Image (cartoon, rainbow, N blue to C red):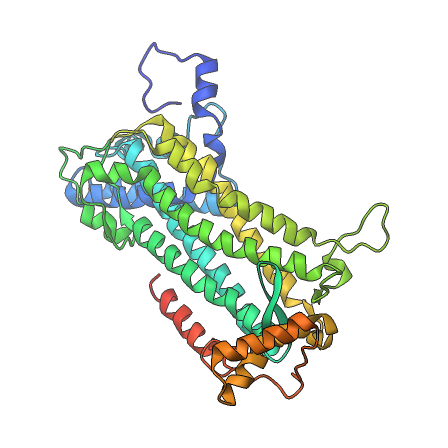
Length: 432
């Protein structure tokens, strides 16, 4: 069944297969939102007189039954049905007769799929937000737990200055704060209603778009009907940018973990059940989970660019190119949620090595501490720097760090600022 097909017309099977592509696969994900949008639209049609109150009530009841089938997993798009919109309308017509044929009044598949995707993305952004919140809480917990465990800090992959596991975990927690800012912005864009824009140019029917906005609990309308259609693709791209930022944080964290697990570093380890082995080297404990998180998140970071290339030369109005946004973005969302979950599983069971900096090879981490100690005695900084630098060049540098490190400013080893970071995160969460 095709909503656009006329009598005595048919389409080549080859053309149909090519144009439908993988759309049915992703339409299945949109089914609950398609029904949700249809319930709002039908309710509005009954209120403005384009359906009788009884017709609207009958259609809504039948749509709710379909929604329950979707929830139970018994709904599917039949092989000879073009898309989810056609499947829902076909079921309605089979069950309630000609009333089912009335629900498309004042609506196009263009605004149908636009509202379906907005509803889907709005929910998925919330799902990702919840997953980010879980990981954030774990990172803050680990930061506090290991705040007194020192760690070598690096610049240019050279030994630089003392750091701590508390500082390291907390850094990634704060990174998620900024990532979530982008997700909140994407949520605001997805939380606008395109329904009622029709094919992109509105309708001569007296539709009440404010009412469907209320029924679907959108924050506001996409007011201009042309722009409502232009948000198709743009909403996906903005969401992809937000998710790619989260992916970038996960990728960097995964890379750190791969390095820190390396025997030449040996900063962290994990239980055997969380690592894999080699087919010929019995000593291996491979960081496969982190390597795959890194790879998957790097791929996710390519999604905004892929969407840009798909959308960039399209004029206003609907184009079939937009169909491909689903197969580009939807699988990436599932990958991101899986990466967030697995990062949490791993870091919850991380084992941190103690007394790392007692190793002789890390003595130059304390060169800045030695300079600062001289400055505190009244020696000008540049002179103190030269004095310590000369000691290092001569190989006679000595510094006793056992007395502890006096780092007290905000965001330093001795003052992590986790309470402020948590407060900032909670402020962002309120934007959803």
